[in-house]
Image (cartoon, rainbow, N blue to C red; front, side, top):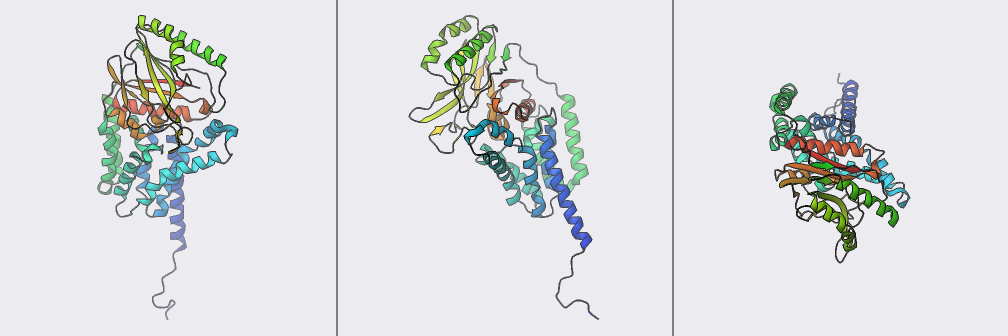
Length: 402
């Protein structure tokens, strides 16, 4: 006697269904943990974020590929408290949550759309590539490859390609041999690598001036701060002195004239000043975020290529800070090439590789994190900048205002 009609599908086993659901939950939880720990800012934990592409390889369905959503949720949660402080009462309470959801959507979309169960390795590499190239690389953070500097220091481009090769060969080698290859490469590179020496003639100055994006400081407060900066710069003879991003809020001909006595003194004592400030963009309401060079040596400015979206870069508006992708990614300091990653650029793979491709001798990382001083964001920026410097085997000089 037949229990089922012809062509009627057999009912799915409850145990099999519960096993699949349990497996999916484990993948989601593991992805969230990888994102949270890898982008927690805790010293030397950023290496964990590189594990996510290999977790993605375990996806047996597009549903399981949604682990990318949980990875980016764990990695970018600090956007909520950071943006809440930055915008304060000048924006809706929902804006921080919308920014957080935007980070998740932009980061996870390539992993979901490019998923293919049969060619999962190609899907993973394609997602990493799409997220490393414009336009997504201009807006998405928490790219897993940023941590390769902690895995394979001093290896430069080889360190970038090693995980990609391991992903591609995963189908044939399996998890054990792939883990063995990564672990062996990790040990070999760390045994042979010696951290680069810091130049005693480069001084990076941290400040605690605070700040506000919407309430301008009084002229008296700004004058007092400038005097403090001038006195600090004059303490360092025969040196390069790096100050944080926008430590002087705006620069004009009047400001330049006000600093002339200090510039002459710096010239006489062979001190080069690298000062974060902003200058207006002619015929617009916008500004450029720059690292100004004054004192001893040539006078020029590094222009930030990618400002923070929405907070600074207003997507086609004539105000705010526009994209400056065509500006040079390095400057000359002490007759050496210096890569510059200003604040938000430290968290992005595209501007970092653009700068490091010039084979610089040092990495300068000025930032202004007053709005994020009570979050993990400053520590996350530090870990990212250090990973880039270690990958290229060059010294890192950071100057931060909080």
